[in-house]
Image (cartoon, rainbow, N blue to C red; front, side, top):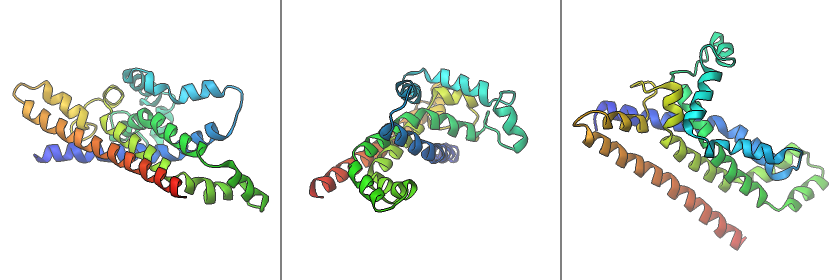
Length: 227
């Protein structure tokens, strides 16, 4: 592959990594709240969390542009602090994080719900506080689900297109990830080979992430069966 194509691959991995890493703390908190608590409006909150799964990605990208653009209510506040998302790779990571967030939360919620609450109650009766119970029992037991959610989110971030191109455009070397580069090549006469090459690479990366998540699920089930 050419140097430009390697830069596209590196930028895609960078965007996907930070998209997952940046959304992980919030994803853990939201999944735990949904798994452990009942409260008024929970159904509406759950629907809002999963909204990016059903919304057209262009709508998400436009909302990000309105909110995080240089003149937006959030973007305007962040710009004096040197934090800029619009037309930057950081904006691509933000868009990818939002699109992959529901998959991350769903996997984590299932992991939290599969943990026997009696273990947490037993720890509390022995004097452990809520934070200690969470970090020493709940979170370690949910590691397979956490890893699965992170890998699914990573695969989703790698394939993100609509929200990214709407929010940060298609700038080579700055915001042009694999899907955007493939789209660009399809618009250039005679560039079918490059588009095919990057498409095959995208499929391989996505399959690797899905295979790893499936392996983690099977391993977790195996441990539970023998545990």
